[in-house]
Image (cartoon, rainbow, N blue to C red; front, top):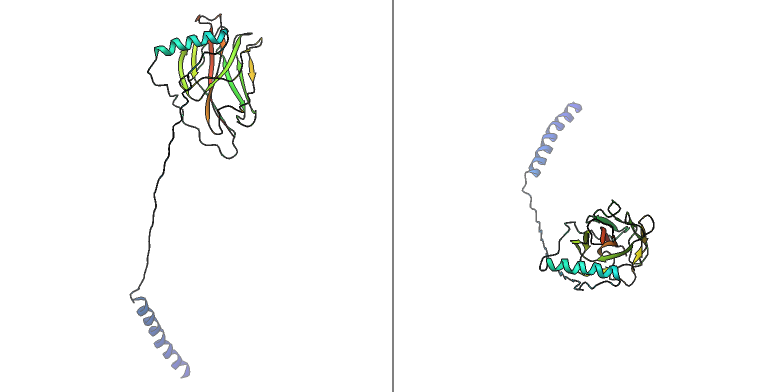
Length: 232
């Protein structure tokens, strides 16, 4: 009898508990949510364009005077034209683990050796260390050569080749007039201390040389150009 009574009580209690649970779950819920979104999309852009308006001035020396005359005469033909954009994307800011960036651009033409002179850059370009080496190869042997640079690119006919450092933003001498060796090569490791080159800025480099035996007859030719982004 006791066991039967217990079973009866359980049979009544379980449905009652379930009914209470269902009753609670059916009660309306009162939720109070306060979501406040404050967005401040203030944008402050300050773009300052600094253009180097330094005019091209004739470089000193006989070979440089010849080059200057060619530049002046050919720039006169394109007066009023917009400097050519090389179409290359801007380099990203290299802030951590900077290794610099060296990109070959602007072609070289065949010189009296039967080859096109090549300008190559090796090492890490830095404004605080002499870690960059610029080398010319495949130029005529024992000929004057000079390294130039500019803040902007261009591609203009120049002698028997192309001028790839822009006279619009000012062509600067990176070296004195040097001589190629017996194989037509020469290298420099420039020191950029005191130069206008700043960390994370991009500049364009080229070399030109005397080439009196070339078919073009102008007596000068150029290498390809390099676009270089500098580390601190």
